[in-house]
Image (cartoon, rainbow, N blue to C red):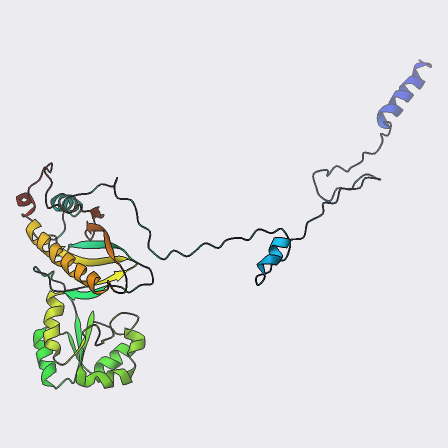
Length: 316
């Protein structure tokens, strides 16, 4: 037992005081960028090449420096056109059939067929803008304002024709206060100077409601223009597309066809007038409605393989 005590004492010393190991080169935070490095270790310094300064005025200096000139992309001058050779195209009756399927349960007078004519045109070129009296007018609840003296005979005729707001000072104050309760505005020629003095262009101009002689809204007799506005339709080219309400859901295919034919003839005349300034061509004609998608038309009234007749579409 005397001999074993020193052995137990030695074992206890070894277990309680283990031999010291050599220190490692790095600390325990070896994944951190702040970990200390071992003595004598020098990290490799990566030299960053300075980018040469390009000269905008003298491109020959750039060639001497070995810098390739980056070519700027030219801005597109025309609108993007898609290849329609593999696209699905529909006759007028087939397109009306699918549109009516989307408009089930809607009132025939509340939903309108809309035409979208996509043009091959320049972006910054002149645009098409005109008015058209369709063979079968699309009735709308349009509100018309007439700027003329409230006690003049022109005001009486305007009210009888269907104008909702007639006057001068009252109209000017309402417009300046932001109360614009009309969709079209007509000015009588005698009130033009007073309207310009009131400064309505800042409010009505951005909304497209400012009367002007170019658009035919500054006239001697506003009552004649009111009749055209109620029964007529206005169209304008925006972003290379001309849109217009062409018919109502309750129209027959023959009535829709006559309206489309009249609209396309008027559109071609407008393009012919602008032919000396720019070249415009019809790229695609699409028929849609308020809640239905667009269907590209192929120019036919009814295809030979159609499973529907115009008589089936004439009943609402």
